[in-house]
Length: 100
Image: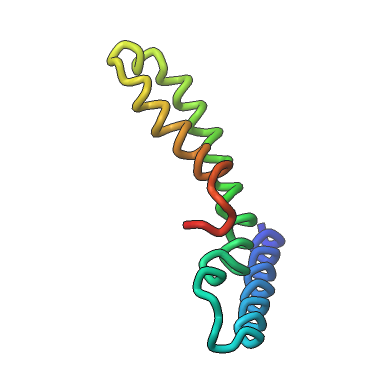
């Protein structure tokens, strides 16, 4: 666990320094569209958010399968699938890197 925290801290530090250097090169005309998904956001997305999204997708799929008989009885299969499978899948595998 200590190694994981150290690796994440190092990745964030490197991303922050890369963003700072990029801002210095571009000066005051730093493009705001470029700023939306760069450096720190992309690294945090790859290191932290995507793995959490994969875990949410796996856990959601398990809960969906476990709750499927109840969802069928109540007629809420679509709603349950959207909440437990589709949203985590879209967040993890469809969304562009660094997007909110």
